Length: 491
Image 1 (cartoon, rainbow, N blue to C red):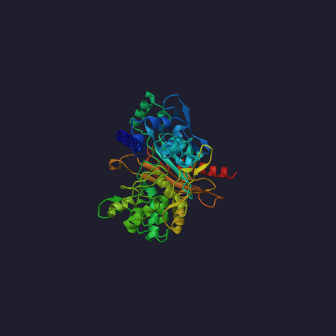
Image 2 (tube, one colour; image 1 turned 90 degrees about the horizontal axis):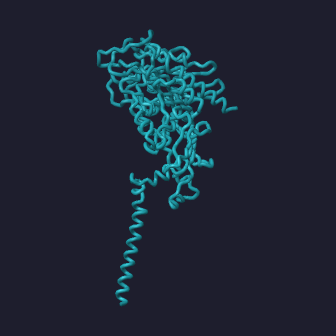
Image 3 (cartoon, one colour; image 1 turned 180 degrees about the vertical axis):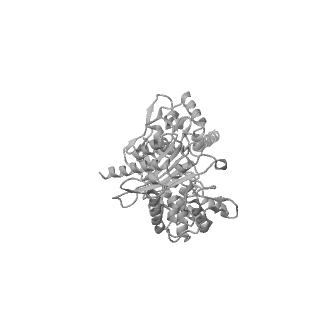
C-alpha cells in the first residue's frame, strides 16, 4: 500500500512541477507575445485607463485628456491643434500615434520605468505610474508667427537656435486638428478617411518629412565647399566663369536672371544668385569635396531624429560633371527638408558647427521631477570658422544689397539667401520659393535664430520668387518673434 502512495505522491509532484513550469513559460517567456497579441485589449484598456501626460509649449500644456466613461476611458484633447500638430502629432485609440505622441509614448502613458518610485516596481505590480510631461523647445510666439506667415499656403517653416540646436518653430501648412482623430466613434473613421483622401495632404509634416529641391539656397553649401577646398581664396576676386555656362559634356546652356554674372566675384554671385558662377564652382571644387561638405551639413544622414525621425536630405555622391553643376545650384536630384536648410543657416551663424536639433528640452514626472534633460551637442563640422565668417558676410550682403532685401529688420543684423527651386516635368511647375536666414540683435554676442521657409504654391512670377517675394517676409516675421522672445527672457 505504501508503494502506491509513494507513486501517487511522485505523480502529484511531477504534475505540480509541470504546472509551475507551464505557468513560468506563460508568465515569463510568453508574456510579451501575449501582451503584443492584437486580440489582447488589456494593454489598450490600461493605456487609456488614466489621464495621459501633457506636451508643454512655453510652459503651458497644448494637450489634455477627457474622461469619456467608456472602456477606453480617457481620450486625447488638443489646444490649438492645427498650430502644434507638426510637433505633437496625434494619439488615437483607433489609428495609433505619431511624432512626439509616439516617440514619448512610454513617458506620456506612464509605462516608462523611470517614472516608477522603485526599480522594476511597475513590472512587479503590473501597474502604471501617472503619465509624465514633455517640455518642448518650441517658442509659442515664433510658432504663431510662422503659422500666420504661411497663412494656409502650402509650405513649411523650421526655426532653430544656432548655438544649441533647439527647435523654436516647426510648422507645416496646410495643417489639421489631431483632436478629430481622438475617440472611437464613426466620426473618427470619417475624419481619418477625409484627411487621407485630401489632395492637400494636411497630415504630411512638410517641415521634417518632405524633401524639396533647395534651389539657390544650396549655394551656401557650394560656397562653403569652394572656400574650404581652396577653389575660391578671395570672395572679391573674379571667378573665371562664363555667362551663359555650358554644362560639361553637353550642349545645354545655363543662364542667369540678372546681368553681370560673367567672371563675377563670389560676393556678387551670392548677392545676386548667379547660377553660372555656382555651377562652375561646383565642378571646379569637385565631387569629393562637394559631397564631403554636404555631409558635414547633415545631408545623407539617414539617422537624424529630434526625437522623431527626420527624412534624409540628399546630395548624390555619384554624379558626372554636368549633374554636379546642376546639383551645385540645388537642382538635379539634390533634396532637402526645411529643417535641414535651417541647420545650414544655423551652421553659418554658429561658426561652422551643426548642433543636434532638439525638440524636447526635458521630460518630467507629473510632480515636476526631471526624468531626462538632454544637453546640446554638435553633430557635424560643416566648415572652418574662417569659411563660416566669410559666408556670414555674404549672407548679410544678400539681405542688405541683394535679393533678400525683404527680410531686413531695422537695427538687427540679418543674413539670408533666396532660392527658386524648379520642379515638375520639364521644370514646368510653379517654382518653390525658399528663403533661409539668421538674425542677430545688436547687443547679442552671436546670432540667436536661424530660419528656413519654403512656399510650394508661390503665386508670384518667377523673378519675384527669386527676389524673396514670398518666403523672405515670412522669415522676417519669424526672426522678429524669436528676437522678441529672447528679449522677454532677459526681463
